Image (cartoon, rainbow over all chains, first blue to last red):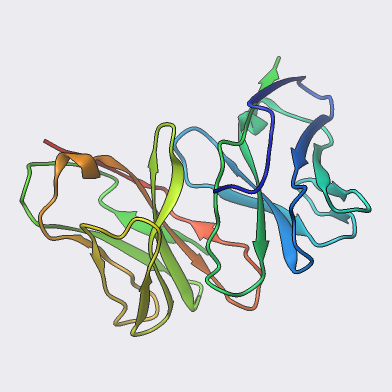
Length: 111
Length: 113
């Protein structure tokens, strides 16, 4: 079972920041927070991951609360091509590397 | 270009006719995996392989076989397909030292009549 809770859908205006929340209150100390997205029926795409520090890459920023029970993915300037289902996944590094996908958040970027 | 390729991308077949979906990656990744995606059930892992000649069951392995004879290839075999295996299938690969940053293929949409 997915160990994360995300809103089923969100809207965002093109050019504005999209802030996607995720709750993972049962996260363990060795588990990372990963974000993937899936544009309609395409293969999921890795976005970013973090353990406890905030992270930023060319695609997005990840803000993890100090208690690690929740996080926010930030797309700083959303475009129409960012319309996708966004998955927040908690997973330990190593082991079987299995990703447990929940239902995610459908982000609709509006023109 | 680093990529995971799958073939075929679309397939319509009949019950009981053996089929193979190929998966190949050009990134020298040790880990490869197969997922299926169904409406309302999300993506579920079928099989995975930590390296050549090492495979293991995921969450929904029934009705599927895999092999890993070469590092780059990880075919998914349906010996006797049934309609409940109609689904969208994704192959993924990972360099095991790179956390869980998996690369996914474009998907294979399979319909079993």
